[in-house]
Amino acid sequence: MFLIEWLSLCKFFHMDLNKRGWQWALLLLLALIWGTSFILMKRGLESYTNNQVAAFRMFFSFILFLPVIIKRIKKINKKNIKPLLLVGFVGNMIPAFLFTKAQTQIDSSLAGILNSMTPLFTLIIGMFLYKSHVKLINIIGLVLGFLGAMGLIYNGSAEFLKGSHWYAILVVIATLCYGISVNEIKYKLKDLDGVTIACLSFFLIGPAAGIMLLFSDFSVALNTENYLRNLGFIAILALFSSVIAVTLFNILIKYTSTIFATSVTYIIPIFAILWGMFDGEKITINEILWSFVILLGIYLVNKEKIISI
Image (cartoon, rainbow, N blue to C red; front, side):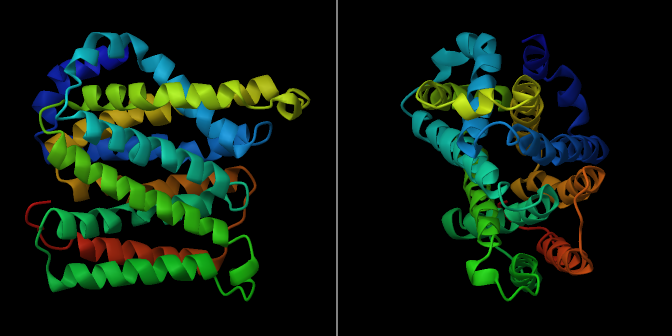
């Protein structure tokens, strides 16, 4: 893929991503791309099961990455094979299945809002596993973020313990996975560039996704009216949200901190909500208020410079 090879050279980004303005520009671009991923997943789920959507997304990404994988596969060694496996499965494959499962019961806007917990887990994991230092205000931000997320999940519903909001917890688990993956990229894969990390991690998970599809039953999907169109939406999801966005995100991590890079999830809810509203979904005042609590918590997490992150 010419686009990915161009990104791998980083001639444009090498000069500009050292500047904060361009870092923010890339952050907004990533938010726009990933903000649309929830609605694309929703479209795929109209014909396919949640596992099929996730498996197609991973397998299509693997296929799209193949030209780059062939050129970079020799970079896999004993030192980086475990981190790459972790990034592939924990940072990409597991969240893909968790998100599609969650979206069988929750709106894309809610999924996008809960996704903003990623920086919180990134901070916690960095602090405990990589010995990064935090300020009291950062801890306050963590607490607020968790309270906001729990309030958003509960949202005043007495049916919480037996209702579909349990599926929202799957999104929270996915953000934990992202937090692990981001720290692994930053600290264990320093010798690999963002493109190499992206393509090799998908090389390690792509075949598994293909096997899942091989043994999957598509009889129900083939009987739906728009199964080809919805398969196209999944392909778009793979191209933009996995291949392009993951590559750009990995590059951004190399130029900035893990906390700044994961700050993309602060902005994603805005696009997710807008797309959800455009698609006819409703958002309540309570969801908006709890969203502000989450964003306030995340703001406090980033209030002061965090050493080693």
